[in-house]
Length: 206
Image 1 (cartoon, rainbow, N blue to C red):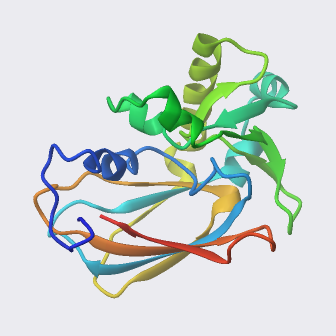
Image 2 (cartoon, rainbow, N blue to C red):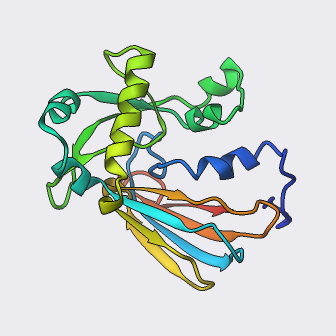
């Protein structure tokens, strides 16, 4: 949906952003501050499709094979806001890319409240320090496959009026496919971990 509330044409450039939400991701991992909680409220939903899935990154870390755990320990990943969109065919100039500097986060993090280890591997990872492009992309794909096995995933089927809240610091999520000619209006609010950052960021997820 556009700013006027009307459904966008399928070839509109912004549609790529909606489709990119179908990748496993964490909200705003490409920012310099950590996204804490997200809340998503359902206003209008299509008759079919458009569910949201959540994967538990704490359980994913606990279940890592020993050899893979040894590989990811102490590695740092680079996250870029436009990386997932380039995977879907969008192209950007060097100037556009320069306006959005990447962030860097370790692949293994500790939750600031519970202290539990987390396997932090959203699709926004564009590279891993010390690795070539091919090696880092294959590793990220392997880690996402591991973290999103059925035993780690919850699927939410939306109803109008639902409000779902999750902790971005220990989950991945993705929207599921739906007919882009149908209206899907979900509103998201995200709070940030850093107290010096803006309190919330609000957008429309359709």
